[in-house]
Length: 79
Image 1 (cartoon, rainbow, N blue to C red):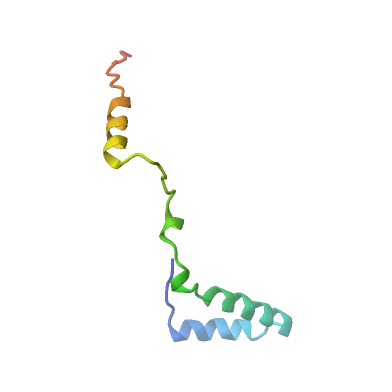
Image 2 (image 1 turned 120 degrees about the vertical axis):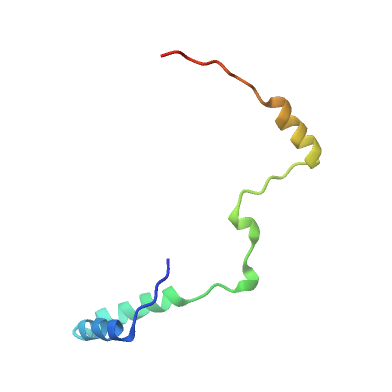
């Protein structure tokens, strides 16, 4: 989730962070810099978003198997 803040809010943060020692400021700068580095868009692979199904069967065969394996269990339990 990303959100934007106003310049006045940034100024308030800066006034607080200005009091930090130099080592803490450097670590904060590194963390902020790492957070804005972007991934090369050309390296994006859609397969990373889901588990790819690999099978030698065509889609019609897979659909037929799924439909045949369905079980209709309409047992209604009385309480």
